[in-house]
Image (cartoon, rainbow, N blue to C red; front, side):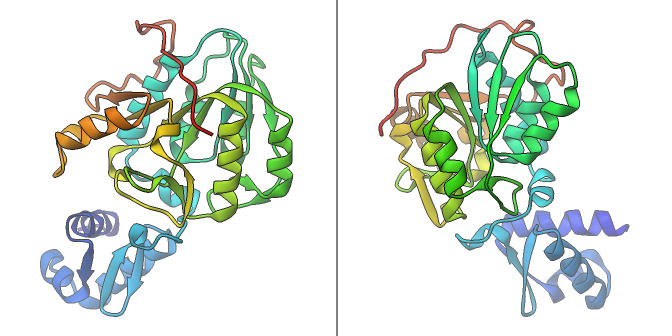
Length: 286
């Protein structure tokens, strides 16, 4: 078994159990404990798990842990693509967008059409890079300044001050987790302040978060679920252990819930080739 295959299996075991032991993994993988330790060290270095004495635990087990962009981008890729494709249906010509940091918003940025006359303001270096890579010049891009985080977002008072002078039609926001009691959260205090300022500068908040983030609570609160105008997640919300009650709860908590199907994720989907009804934009709580 190749190292990449072993490491994928380790992450699968971790997702299922929450914690894993070196000895147990050695039996499952039929390799030495030394090999398992090397694999755990490699995954820990990528931020995909946390190495502990005798084994490993999920990186998301601690509310203040913030994995790097590279580590997060390798997770839930199919769900992120499906969510980004659904988010495209919210776009209308001439819109001004605020786009937060995050791997799902980065996926959205890669798909944004160049022919709608969009203006995008972002605090994400990766989102800005994706927009620049298109090179067609059809999207006017504004990059907000600030201090860089492990997730390649810019945060701090400089970023918040810039947002005080902006107004957007729609904010696309990636989050660390969403929870009925805690709302939408971040592991980074400064990033949560920037995200709250983004909400205040936008008519409508659209949160993009895959179903695995339900119930995850970060260190810093951003806003309650009642502040979310549109929540786009994937249809695994319907099949998890707490469902179907979870779907009903979310529909009662947010302005609109959209579930992106994981079996239909066209890579080149745009608002012009996918039929949809106009979104019912709603205001948000302060």
